[in-house]
Image 1: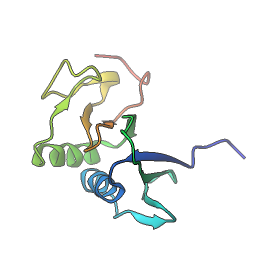
Image 2 (image 1 turned 45 degrees about the vertical axis):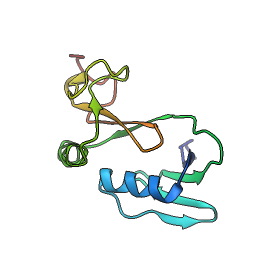
Image 3 (image 1 turned 120 degrees about the vertical axis):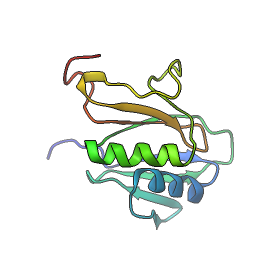
Amino acid sequence: MPIRLNHTIVRVRDKSESAAFLTEILGLPPATTFGPFRVVELDNEVSLDFADDHGPVNPQHYAFLVDESDWDDIFARIQEHALPYWADPFKRRPGEFNTNDGGRGVYWEDPNGHFLEIITRPYGSGNDS
C-alpha cells in the first residue's frame, strides 16, 4: 500500500467555529463529529480534525490544491467575507494573488491565525512568474 496522509489534527480555540469557517470558505460539506473532533473531509480522502486547545494556538500553514473554477468560487468567498489576503507567505503583497507556476494562488488567515492557501498548480509544476 502506498503511504498517504489520512488526517491531521488542527488545534484551535473553538473547533466548531474553525471547522465551520473552513467549510464555508472552501465550499465543503459541513464538518462531522468523531470523538472529540470536528472533522472536515477533503476530496482526496484526507481530513482535517479540529480539536479545542486550551492554551495559545500555534499557527500552522495549510495549502489546498484546487481547480480553476473552485479557485474563483473560494476567492469570491474570501472577498465577500472581507478577509485580508496576500499573494505571498510573507504578507508583502496585500490585496493581490500570485500566478506562480502558471496558476493562481492566494493566502489568508483563519480565526486562529492559521495561514491558509489555495493554489491551482503545485509548486514547481511550471514556469514561476
